[in-house]
Image 1 (tube, rainbow, N blue to C red):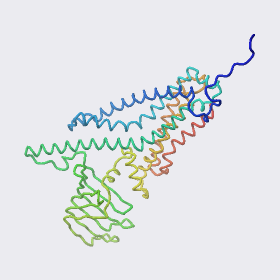
Image 2 (image 1 turned 120 degrees about the vertical axis):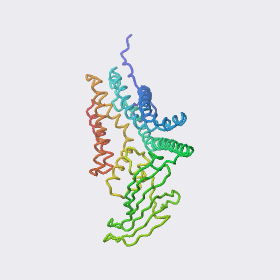
Image 3 (image 1 turned 135 degrees about the vertical axis):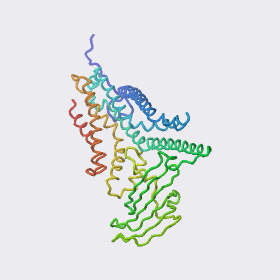
Image 4 (image 1 turned 180 degrees about the horizontal axis):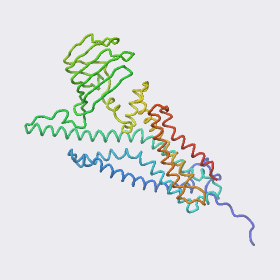
Length: 407
């Protein structure tokens, strides 16, 4: 006797309802995560290997020339490479998502999933949860790992260069020749500094600051009134900063007083040594302020933004834009996933290669928007916060529109 009962429908979930209210992952979720994580790990290793080769090409010869040992070189690259994770993670995530989703599209697995009653968002919920986790990972990388890696690797390289310079000075002194001067013995450690402390109406000009001796040579400090007219000027042959007391001590200099209205010199006093308690500018901060925003870590950018939060200076704005952009970059995994899904899972009549190429093009459009917004923010046309958020908001809006068009 033939039964007329209909077969029970095949369900993808162990629970009665397929949705986010069910704790745990179903079979489809585990399958997607497994395939994606395998490809993500492979791409991360491959891209990190390429960046490792690039770092070796850039720095290895310099490290050998300053006499760094094998242990120092290994330690340097071990501290340097974690800073590259923030670069390779977005690209690796995009390529791995495109590969996995295109594979599902090509094998008609998405068609089967949707025929089972799941929409695109429900079918890819595991990827969305993973993207949220990666947003937290990106925040951790940008706020902790990458700053530590940048600063530690830079400090190690400078320490090795200083040691090499000191050893060269000892060798020179041992053979009886004249000791190297600050200019020749500390090559790479001398910087000219121009620093305008608008908060305290003080301007600094340092001809040379040596990281080798932590001494400023040829120092001029001008104190201004509220109208930015010079009141006093301190000039010294050299100066040193006491980080504990937060004071500057100057040697072989002269202090001058001016009439702010006429600019005429009223008094001039020479000194052999003078400590100024209210000069508390940190030379390390001054040196950071002369670097490009892209060369600074998240923590270093934070120091500049916190110190100059009340300033209205175009130079400070560039650092604010970079600082907020690094915060906004933590939304990158969600943006990348929102871009990849609509194109990689295009209609069955559309070749997967077409969707992949479009999503990659949109990914590069995101970076073009990011650079454009950075320029607008740096020039003061946009508020730094909005300049950082604009590319992400634009991509999120576009992704929402594309999701709305998916059938």
